[in-house]
Amino acid sequence: MTDRQSMDIPILRLSDVLVTGLINELDDKTATVFADELTERIATERARGVLIDISRLEIIDSFVARTLTELSTMARLLGARVIVAGMRPPVAITLVELGLQLTGVETALNAEQGMAALGWHHAPRPPEGGTRREALG
Image 1: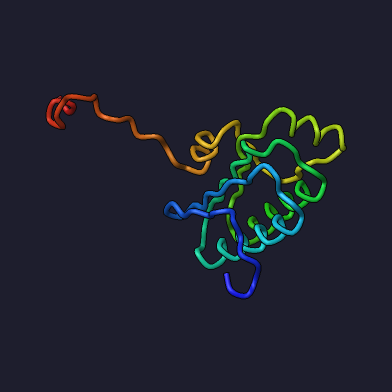
Image 2 (image 1 turned 180 degrees about the vertical axis):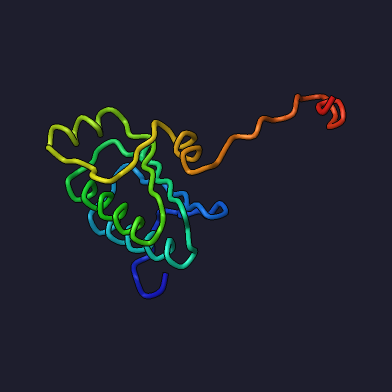
C-alpha cells in the first residue's frame, strides 16, 4: 500500500485466486481500507477468484454487510468471482434480523468448499510409510 493506512488483513495469492479472511472486530475504516486494497489487488494481479473467510467474524453490522456486497459487485466488474466462506449462524441470524441481504455475494459453508467452487481441488496425500512407487502400484 502506498500512502493509505496500513492494513492488518493479509491477502494471499494462490495462482489466480486471492485468499483473505476477516477478523472478529472489523470497524468501518478497516472495512473500507480492506475493500480498496482487495479491489486494487484484483485488478493489478488479474485475479479470477477471491475467497473471503469470515469464520472468525462473530458479529456483522450493516456497513460491513454493504461493503461485502459492493466488493463482490466491483470484483465481478473486474472479472473475478467472490465467495464468502464460513459464515457463523449468529452472523446469518443478524443479517436476517436487520433485513440485510448480501445481494450478489456467493457463499460457501467453509474455506475448503469455497476454494473448490473456485476450481481448487484437494489432492489426496500418498499413503504414509510407503514409497512413491508403492503408492503408484
